[in-house]
Length: 277
Image 1 (cartoon, rainbow, N blue to C red):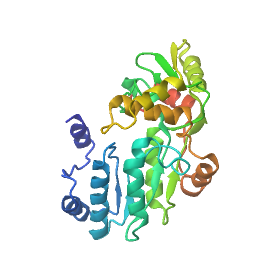
Image 2: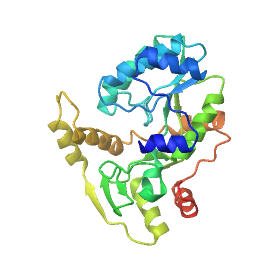
Image 3: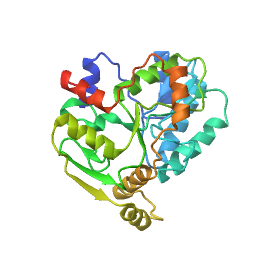
């Protein structure tokens, strides 16, 4: 795959797994890993099965006694059951983590990845124009709600640097937040228009429209793409993706003093000077 090819070019070893405890345990012991970080984003109970295997492998491993499960969202302390599929996948696993003491863990949340504001030619992120309100490739925006709802976002590379710093810390808190910037999509669109010196055509989707979609899928046995997007749209309109500012800034000082978090203007400026941000 292209991902494997990219990793090979960077000299990053790849260890195939079937995500059973035995398979993961072999990899952890062979590589002498000390921290396991998951980016496995699933909306079904498979999330729970796989993450339980990750945890059990850490518990049985020689020295991998730290785990960062796949959360990567917003203010989960104030809204632990949002989006709704987190309530049926992440929340049960959080309870499993709290019930054990063999493995240290933290739930890491950066808000939105700011890289989605960039055109595809400038970022490794795959665009999600149906989900993220600003489509830099199609040069259009679909603002959910009023567009004045507070959001958090962080540059992907800065997220990576923050995770490295966190792995160096001796002790973790249960939930860790980073945010480059607290802003709104209306403010972000204005920044984009000023930076590129061209108007960004926009449409709006109201909270009422989003609610209708959510209600239409209430009780669905399987989560459809439309329902998943509506759940994320609810997060936007309710500002659930905005990381709690006081705690985030305190943790920035505690863990991430060595990371220079870039705001949207700085990210757009960086993209002019490099091939990939």
